[in-house]
Image (cartoon, rainbow over all chains, first blue to last red; front, side, top):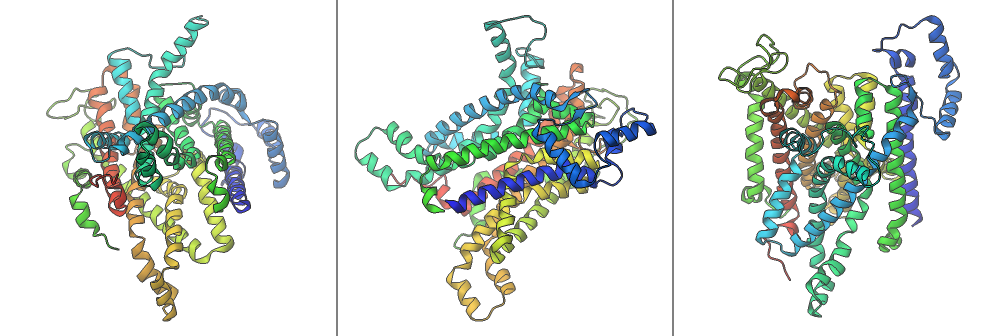
Amino acid sequence: MRNRTMKVVVAYLLTIFILLFLNFLLPRLLPGDAIIAMYSGHEVVMTEAMYAELVRMHGLDLPLHEQFFMYLSELAHGDLGYSYICHASTADLIMGALPWTLLLVGTSFILSAIAGIVLGVESSWRRGGRFDRSLLTFMLLLDGIPSLAIGITALTVFCLYFGWFPSTGAMTPYSGAEGIEHIKDILWHLVLPLATLTLSMIPGDYLLIRNSMMLTIREPYVLTARAKGIKNRRVKYLHAARNAILPFATRIGIRIAYLITGALFIETIFAYPGLGLLTYHAISNRDLPLMQGILTVSVILVLLINIVVDLMYKKIDPRVGYAY
Amino acid sequence: MHIKPFQEFAKDKIGVAGLVLILFLFTTAILAPVIAPHDPWDYSASSFQQPSKEHLLGTNDIGYDIFSELLWSLRTSILFGIAVAAITCTLGLVLGVSAALIGGMYDMLVMRLADALLAIPTIMILILIAAYFKPSTTVLIIALSLVLWQTIARGVRAQTLSLKTKLYVKAANNMGAPTSYIMYKHIMPELFPLYAMGFVTKARIAVFMEAGLSFLGIFDPTTKSLGIMMSYAMRYLYLDVWFNWLLPPVFALSLLIVSLGLISYAIEEIFDPRLRRNNATPI
């Protein structure tokens, strides 16, 4: 167990190192000058005095280790820098967008997990049958269609062609709706991005669960359970599936990283005001402080989720306590 | 190895379907300069033409022939996929095998780095690097490979560790075979499934990433890319261009990724016979 803890801690430290390298060291290693890089491409005429003021403000005249402490203490205070494009603190911009991304990613995570597990279990139980074969083929095809393509198709069909769903935003602006109406409005805007993200996640979950169920079904304890005459559904879900979803639990952290990547494209397509759309705007405006801030927040988010999963994992699968 | 991979593959309908599709797309991409009816950088045609005999899919906002653009973009996607997959597999193989053989601190560092790279949404790293450096396609290929090697290295390392304890490897070692010989003769061939599988999965991720990143506007906008086509077509949705401009690249990208997915599933099934579909359930 100590070995495992150690492994996890080193991996986290390396992650944080990569983050610091990208956010702190890389801009300072750039050929030329961080200030010029940050402001190049914007319509700013830089005077000597402005330049000197900016260098002083960013602490670029200090020795490197003092710059590093300055960076760390700003980070610890939740100061992620200032976006000169949006004229707002990066942290505020991100905090405004984060809830929408969390709503989208969180709901999609739960929905795709449930659908993937149920379909995977049912499919493996009927292995080789018509249901299994057609579902597997369908899932393999769906798995191939990138979220980008699902999103664009959904947008053209349901928003442009039929006009059933709104094509932008997370709620109707200035509608003044309150209470139930307001929630309905938010859900209405959520439907398509959520469906797209969930559809793109289901095949991965399904294939994972199906494969792991295939191996679990052969275990002697499943045979025993069946021989005892326990109802099929009980054997499937309480005896076999409980163990078959273990590989799923280990991959939660990775899946969250996938979901965030998926959300990046889907939010851009549907102009959903989360971190993904913010990233897209940051890219098109070359807003470096904002990009750094988003990277920091998303990495911290993923790390926190991983820590929770790691802490829970021994509870989920007690064997890891002995195995390591 | 007791599996004859090629015979098994030929029997697998899903795999063969994927292979036929990919060969078709690959040939189209290779022959793009020959088949394309127009120069995709030629903007002399009038813009927003509907599909016609002259312009199979019409023309776009600045008068590019969309069909020719599509063929060239497919070429970019496929070349990008192959390049990234090749570099990633090599990197994963070298790091995985060396970690297994050297062990100790080195092993620890490489594997924890792999864990770290698995947890970070790597696309954010690429976006940041692209924003700093405005890199060329070659640099992006390398950058993408640098963040994708982790799964291959993990698999290769685990397999090498287990092979190291096999009797025939020990026998070769006792008879005085040098490590390089054992590597080359005994370990590398056994790892074949890992890089066959790895190559296809990584090519698939790379193709998706290329389209995705260019959709977000990371690439040089003058290159031909499926993602760039989509992102420009999205800007003119109100002109009803989705049928001839937006959907063709979406469809081409999906076809490419679907075929790679089918192949990778077939390979997985061949090397792990427990997963085969036609096996009757033992219970």
